[in-house]
Amino acid sequence: MKTCFLITTFLSGGLVSAIELNNADTEVDTVVIDTTYGVQLTQAAAPIPFKNFRYPFLDESENVTFIGNDPYLYGQAKQGNGIYRSYADGRIESLVSQDDPSPDDGKPIGAIMGLRTDFKSFVFHRGYDAGTGIYGSFDGGPLVTVASRSTKAPGYSTNFDWVWYADVCEDLVVFNGTPKAEPDWINGLYLYRHSSGQTTRLLDTTQTVSVVGNSRLGNLSYQPRIDATWLVFSASRQGDGDGKIPPKKGIFGWPVTDGGNLDGMFALDRLQVLAPVGMEIPESGGLPLTSASNPMTSNGLMAVVAGSHALGEDEELPKWQAICIRTTDGVWHNPVDTNTVNPILKDGSYFTGFSKWVGMQDGKVIFLADGPNNYQAVYIYDVASDSLYFIADTNVRIGDKKVVSFEHSGHPLVGKRLALMIRFSDASSGEYLATLPKLPTKAFRKKASVPAITEH
Image 1: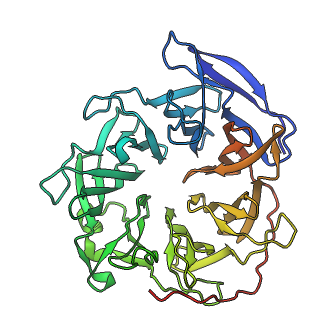
Image 2: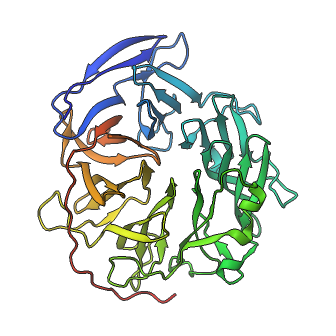
Image 3: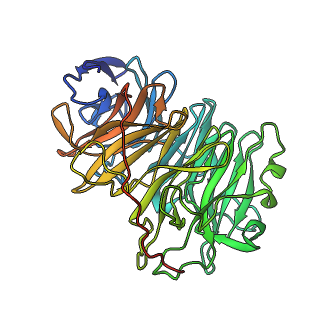
């Protein structure tokens, strides 16, 4: 395990400061940047300290791209909100600032949220007023508008009322948008092509879909996903659920064909059901799928936090949950769930749930597992070797500070290195790198017991 790493920070146009991370009692061994560092807003102003960090994306050169000073996250940062890149040589570059003019209305961008990148291009969500725009930079080019309230919604004579979150794969951006908020709410998924500047409606809540018996889909993922192999999202049949019982959600998607015609590739009649509602969840003792949070796709694999609601449960995520993975042969697998004994605590307790976001990269699934008394741990599951790796938990101390929570991005892993956001009990936080351990962790399931399932 590495115990010492030199990091430098970019302040006032130069590399000026350095610290070492010593004696870390964990596989988390490298600090990228933390709240002891400052961000230079203007050439003349003194640096201000970072308040928080979000979504660390790690590229093949171990450069980390992240959001700094999210105004909605703990700390309520009022300055310095932006997208930054910390290079492996210690330089820190500001890619986008809250004070930059937006390319559509010229006003300061303001709150920056929902960063997504494929390491060639990046997109983000303008967060004020519940989503007024999605912007992106492609292959290092200038900032452009993907969609905003000044963009006409395809299929309608009006502009978008709201735009939500997006994902990017080279020239393509998929996003959730609302072309009509009142009086009848309409929501849909859209595809933006940067090379042509065109936006296409994939589907919305007014259209019937043949793969669900010519019903309409609703509760579309606010964060759809796309990579070179699949465009995926979760949804329910419209009208399912009554406001008290959450609607049952399955997983849907289109395969992406290299060189294929985009209009034909994403035609509504080519939409596939990838995980139908009611599907028996593997290794569950017969539980049916009723919950699929935010499916992720990477190189033909998919992963999602899935679950099954018991009678009377009214939360989006039920108490019984699993990390479900779809391999390239179309088969779903369940390596860990809430019947899995926590292999690290060794007190006989079980995982109590999982963060609804998972990351995927290089054939591995990154997820956060919860336990009793606000316990949280970071794990990686290697699909090819069917191996589980423990990275860190809230019982470890890093730099003599107590950890209270973790966060990762959709693509945080390269080789044996994992990027994490870590928050501490003193309200400080930082972006860190961890090294995967050489040996996997063995985890065991108790015998599954089937709870009563809600019929709704």
